[in-house]
Image (cartoon, rainbow, N blue to C red; front, side, top):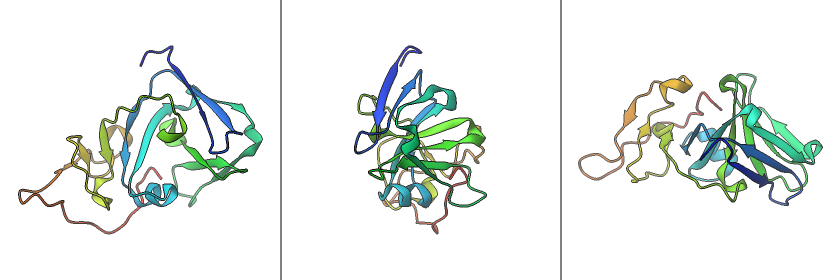
Length: 165
């Protein structure tokens, strides 16, 4: 994606609209319990953009927000009309964590799985499986195996939200 690349996104009902410009800093899948619970899915596809690369173009007043705890690093945002989740600001990273599905024109090119230690769905796709977060985002940078020698997924660990959420 070039720096001039731009994509438009919207909430579920289409009332709230936004643009993202430039290159995504990272794309992948998050397996933490917070992302899974918020998205109501076993895994969440994400694309990160710098905060200043995201512009609300329509109905900014119709955006609601939620911070799970005072210690949460992310502020999740949705449309107040249709309750469609759109993205989460992550001020500690100076990034916006976008739900990939709300940007239809975005060519999704995942590069990694984050928080794979908390997975509920094993994925065999050849991408790196970060135990928690990459070092650049404050994690251990430790990689987990995709599958063990017997072809079974690594054992499950107790649910824990990631430090980013």
